[in-house]
Length: 290
Image 1 (cartoon, rainbow, N blue to C red):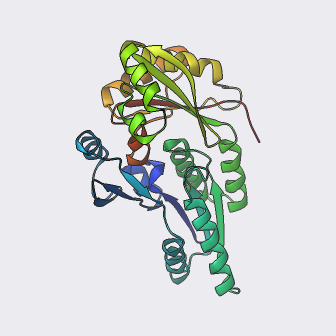
Image 2: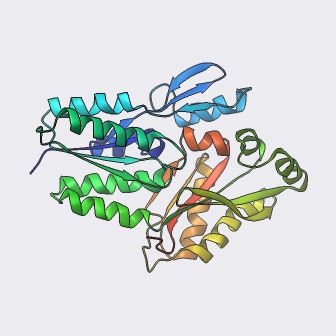
Image 3: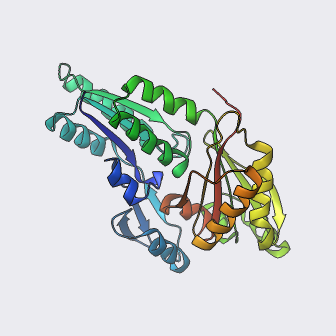
């Protein structure tokens, strides 16, 4: 079996135990908060980052992963005898990281024309465990002897239908990040409105609004029932920034969907920067788009 490496970036939100179990290599983003830079997954836990968000005065800034960092990684793989590399990226519409990887792979190929190491790059078109879960599945398949071409096709198929539905209990952070206008956020806070946000193929839109915190989780499940296509894939995940909310959402989803989530997860720094430290989310499959 050819020696392979599975690489992704830290917006995948893959839990540490699964990262180690499947031998996944994760390039971390650098996040600057109030002038101080942190390495995601190394300098703070998810819970510590939520605390940072509540205390910071400015808007945290996430730096893209550069072409140079990818080139260094590819060189290290070559030196280690790796023959095939699979890199699954954060949504290319939301970060230039995907393009950095593509340019690095092209440069590597030109400088090592006869090395024989193949680099496969897949754009997830999404965020968080909506692609992290499938990176784990890809690594599992490769460990079990699957062909790399089949694994790439598997990922592209899953990303052609995966959707994320999320909401939050305050509009303070989406207002700061610019995801909603200041006027709309202010009006929403006054009226007690909470947005139900769809993330599909890299695009973000407000699909609905609910009034009051008590209706956030039921509102998410109600909208997911309209969008979810278990005939395409019944797999779904539940995530958030609070374990209690995650449990409540998972319980209601199980009752309405008729099966338990394949996994639950904590939302990482990149997504939490935009949603704030009080978000909940469902990942599921809708209609195939490609």
